[in-house]
Image 1 (tube, rainbow, N blue to C red):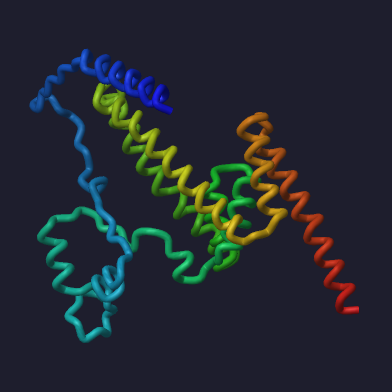
Image 2 (image 1 turned 180 degrees about the vertical axis):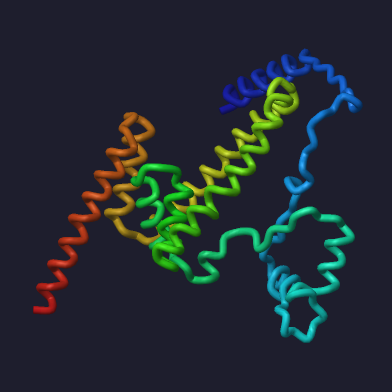
Length: 248
């Protein structure tokens, strides 16, 4: 263990030394700018914490609290004074609080979204939208999921030519890769912990075997999903048959 720590320290010192040798020079020509960045892309969002949203920002038009179209007048004026260009609320996920789907349905949703072609976020939104409002809900979910990133990426692509060779921007993007890895690790842990707490031996076995086959034997995930679906189908048929035998 001590040797590993020593080796890691040497690598860290070497990387810091190499990084220190790099230098960059930036020259700004403010009078030569031709592009205007819309202020709307610097918006903020209000997270749902206690009564931060309901009661803290939105009270409804019939409330005794002074309001402007349902928004508290004092908060509205404060945000106006801060000159926030765009305020998105509520932030976060409300599927659980509104009881749109439970944890079991969420796992089923992820399985369906991963097995279907296309981005997982769009597939998941389609399933939730269809469950809540049928075909109309699915169409609205598709638009709500696709349009925001499409618009944002379009705006970013305009500025990409100007920033792609910038040393600081490239280092920032490299750091974001570590953040993405951390998010994926967190989600994997939470989903795995839910399966373990369920104490279902078959589900735990499928999870562990799938991890080994994918991580170490490089088995295509599509085959693992199909195999898991087949096992689930057989398990459901067996349960249904046993239930029918019990009723008879």
